[in-house]
Image 1: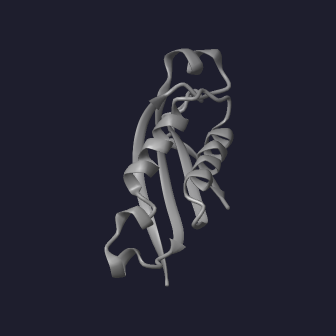
Image 2: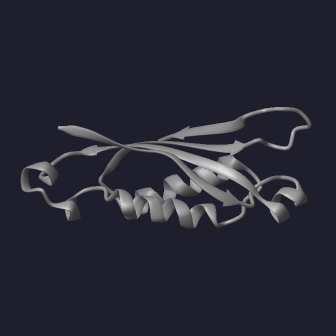
Length: 117
């Protein structure tokens, strides 16, 4: 049986962007993840060590958000790569990185990029 873990609207202050000001001042970002994996013995044996631990997932995302990149596409790819290394049992992953109130010269709630692997 498969199951999904969703971590929604994790918010970070980070320094991603193509403009020097963005990399100096920073901005607010959110990350949303949907992870699909095999349930296996996680529920039957009630063993967190066999699960994709969402505390560890959050820490991985936090560390990746601290690495300044020029594009949110690269940020999302780094998150995906790091999660697959930490949890080889992940079968499918959807990662959305959003830059809140991007500096585009007008009112805009967010710009988001979604990668899926």
